[in-house]
Image 1 (cartoon, one colour):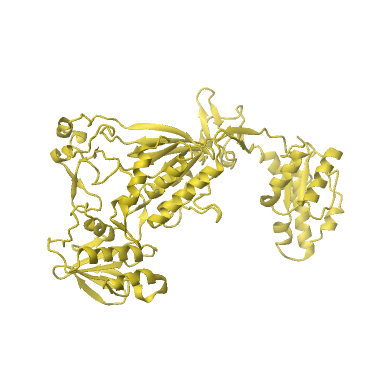
Image 2 (cartoon, rainbow, N blue to C red; image 1 turned 120 degrees about the vertical axis):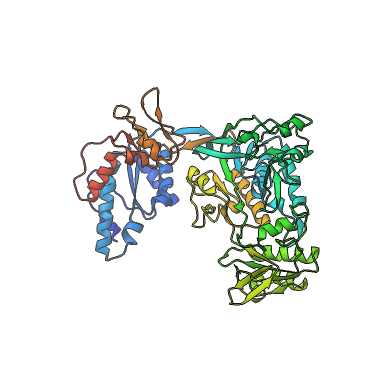
Length: 609
């Protein structure tokens, strides 16, 4: 591309044309600032590289020189001209058309008012598992307010239902419960259990979050956790893990925090019955079966999504369990009190643990190794085997060595359950071998937590093909989503170990603390859409397409209104408006038409704003 040829041409509408070797350099910036100040330049067309790289640089130069920074138009002749390839004449012709289009457009630029909003340093953390608690505590310890939203009536997620954690075989509840206790009693943290986020509006530093709260129907502060209500309840509900049963009222599971009962929706009284046995028996009057759902609205600067994952299941015939079911069966506080039993109640003589056919996550080697070690320790008379080819891969050497030392037999291949002729189970390995065993335990790839996908849609953030949330907007912004101010921590972003989830929560908190200073003023780019009230027909189309909830109908005025602090200037509303009443201020129809006119070699309009 011949830049000198372009610089030597006469350009209609341009009073000063100059070729500067590196305009974005300090020397180039100083030259531009001097020209603006001495020659009274009002509008600038900068011909060079990508606006993404240096548009902010030249806007700053204009502002420092006393000019309006929005009277700038950049022309990208690097990617769109030179790098597009072809002979020099073709590249020069492309660049010439782009410069002509920019000159046609910049004449229609106008001053845009700068808006500021006060930044909130507070945060909403969605999910009360290991990642969510880690994030909430790190933010709260720095004096920020945190609303911790958990859909269940107990904190800790699935981690608090584990017995031990591989590879150190630490007691899960021993290291998690002190953190749960702290978050429940921290003065800067408000915990809402039985709660879900219904709506989020706004932008980075200034979100409004609406939360619906499912009634616990038990006064958490008054409940003694005595269990008397559960002893009288006639209704059974499934216990965590799908083994055994619990009651429709009572502590969610042994060791749950907060240590207070909750009433399940299966309660006879809630389904139109007359049973009030639990409320009548409560010695402190903590049970209120008539408690209604409620709603909270919270203003914050950031949202941390730590929604976790759904425990992997393995539906199948008798004596086929999921790894999660075995986890609960071997837990001393689980539904069987730690007893290991087949479907008919007899103790098993053999257990085979295997990744299910199609399992492709990175958790199964450590998780199955942990369960095998627990079986060898607590049930030494049981023959234990683990499939998956742990002994054939250097990457899986750690769990393989641990199992070999414990006398666990290692088999190749993944597995699926096959019909069994009698008692026990049959595993068909991917190698073609069939293995008979008393209990077959299958690990399936974990799934996203229920509701995570709907929450992602409400927040306008991306999902991966497997349903987990995108959590890497940049390698240098771990846990950041592509929506500024919204972070994804722990297993919400895909299967994680417990300690990886805790680390992610701390990383998300660090992002919040480093980017939001309470009381600071956040300058908003003046790109919020504008409504011509004289043309608006109040049809509501603009509000229906807005991905940020920034546009709504004003009942008093009978027209659409835009909340500037929520608007991102994406232009969806302007494109959808049937009457042309709404526009993006820096991408008006006149500006776009002038740019296209110049690009297509038409004469630029004479009129200027």
